Image (cartoon, rainbow, N blue to C red; front, top):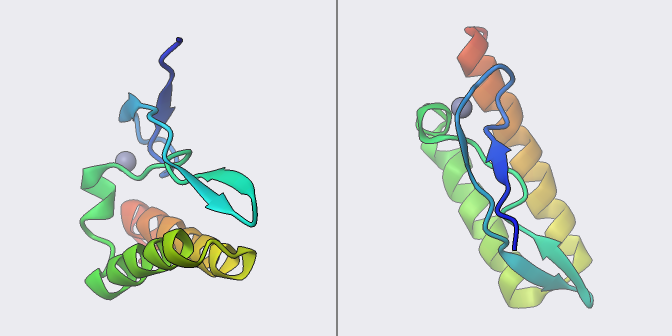
Length: 92
Ligand SMILES: [Zn+2]
């Protein structure tokens, strides 16, 4: 098995980690929750309320396994990436 590395979602961040799949069943389709990643340095400045909303949304997907919950979780993750990137470039 080839181990691939994934990069932090924040543009120009050089941090990487090994990709370990975290598949969750959503309406019978495997969705990999570990396909994207934000490194510790860029995750820490994200407001704790948003980080908490992200973890709760992921948990909701694992529990319900519905595409609605997955879409909600994806929207919160996109917001996390947007906020992390804005903070990283100094406009957040
Ligand atoms: Zn980073």
